[in-house]
Image 1 (cartoon, rainbow, N blue to C red):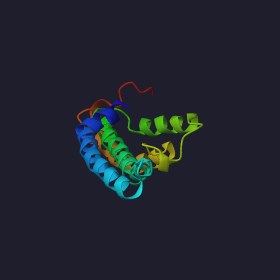
Image 2: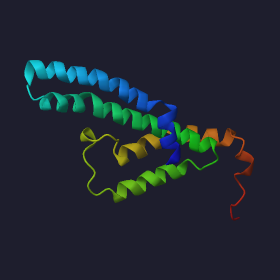
Image 3: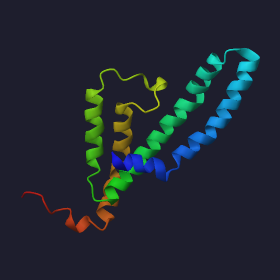
Length: 138
């Protein structure tokens, strides 16, 4: 969804990742120095404990912002749920969410369903609400 990708920029996710990268790197070096000479174990622990959960949080935030943007731009927010339901059906080998940078499609559908009433309200209040009936077959 285009709104989702735009939302990453609006929420400054790239800057957040860069700033957290420096903190994570320093932590990896400290942990590697004291506990793991290679740094591999430290890196894995930082990924599982910080980087991946933060990435999933950003993805969820982008879903939320994107859904609201979609509704305000006169698109039907219900379509976002249908999109992720199709993704869920097509994802045969989706990794466990714990090991992924993204929430599972199933979890995305659940969150979108929670946010859908607000998105519908925003669409109704938008400037395009008077034209929503156009194009419907009666």
